Amino acid sequence: MKNSKHIAVICNYELKPERIGGMDRFFIAYNQACKEKGHEIDWFFNNSQVHSFYKNLKVFASEGISAENHFLEYSKDLKQYDIVITHFVALCTPFFQKLKNEQEAYIIAVDHNPRPLNGFSIKKKLRNKIKGLLYAKYIDCFVGVSKYTVNCILDDYGNHLKRKTVLVYNGVKTSLYEERKSENFGKMIVASHLRESKGIQDLIEAVNLLPEENKVLLKIDIYGEGPMRKELERTVELYHLENQTTFKGSSSELPNLLQEYSFLLQPTYMECFSLSILEAMAANVPVITTSVGGNLEVVENEINGFIFEPGNIQQLSEIICDILQNKKIIQQPVNTLIENKYYLEKMVADHLSLLDR
Image 1 (cartoon, rainbow, N blue to C red):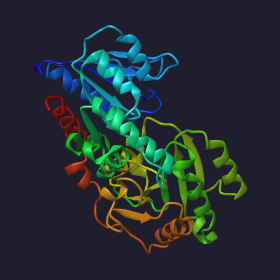
Image 2 (image 1 turned 60 degrees about the vertical axis):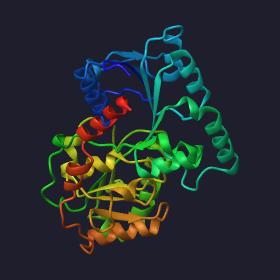
Image 3 (image 1 turned 30 degrees about the vertical axis):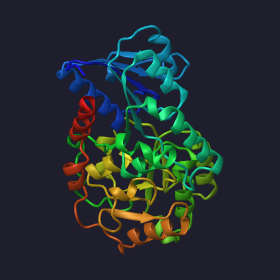
Image 4 (image 1 turned 90 degrees about the horizontal axis):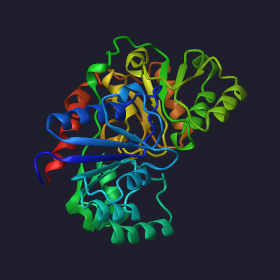
C-alpha cells in the first residue's frame, strides 16, 4: 500500500453530546494520529447531527439509515478509498461483498459485538458458519477487542480465519481520571446502557435482599439511559429503595465523578471488553462484575475487584453485604494495570499498525 492512504471509517454508533465515552475519545485520537501520518480519513456515523466534540473530524452523518448503507450510497461509483474500517457493524454480511466489489479497498472489521450468555441457537450457529464461508473472504483483517472476542470470531465464522484475526485491546485516556483517594464507604456507581442484558434488574433485586442495617449504608448512582429505565425505576419504588438508588441519566462528566465512588457495579450478562471497567479502574475504583466476555482478562477476583456468576442475585447481594460489613476489601491500587496495559495511546498505536499489514 502507498504511504499516504485515504481511509473510511464506518460506525454504527450514535454521537451524543451527553455521552462522551471511551470510544468517542478513541475516534478523536485515532483521527489525529492518522492525520499526523499523512492519511486522509472520512467518518460515517448513523445519526444526522454531529456535536462539537467531533468538530475536527470529517463526518458524513446518515439520515435514518445505517452507517453502512449510507456509505454505499455516498461512495457509489467512486473508487476512492484505500482502506475501509468498520466498528459496531455485523460481521460477514453481504455488505462486505458489496463494499469489496465497489471499493477494492483493504477492509478491516473491528468486532465490538457481545454474544448471548448461553451462546447462539443451533440455527444461528449454522447460519454464522455459512456466512463465514460466503462473506469472510471479503474482509482482509478481523479485529477482536479481547481474547474472548477473537475466540468468538473463530467459533462463529470458522477457524480458517485465524491467520487474519488479530487482538487489539480497548484502552482509555488515563490522564482524564482523578484517582480515588478515600474509601467513600458504601457509595457505588453503575455506568451502563439500561437494557436487560446489562443486568441492572439483578442489582436491584440483590440490594433488596440486604439486611436493613446494611441498606442504610448503601448509595448507588446509576448513570445511563435505555429502554429499561422506567421498569427499573418502578422496581426501585416497589421495594422502597429510593434512598439507596438514584437514576442520574447520561453524563459526559464521568471521568470527574468516578473518584467519588468506592466500587463500580456491572452485573452484565454479555460483554466484549468493557470500557466502563477500564474507566473505573483508571480512577482507582475497583469493580464488581460478572465472569462474562473479556471481564476476566482485566478483573481478578479479590485482587482488583469481585467476580460473580451472571444472574446469581444471591451471590451479588452477599458480595455487597460483605463490603458494607468491611469483610471484603480491595487494598492494592487498581489503576496501575490500566496505566501499563489498557491506555488509549496503546490502543491507537495498535490500530494504526493495522494500516500497514
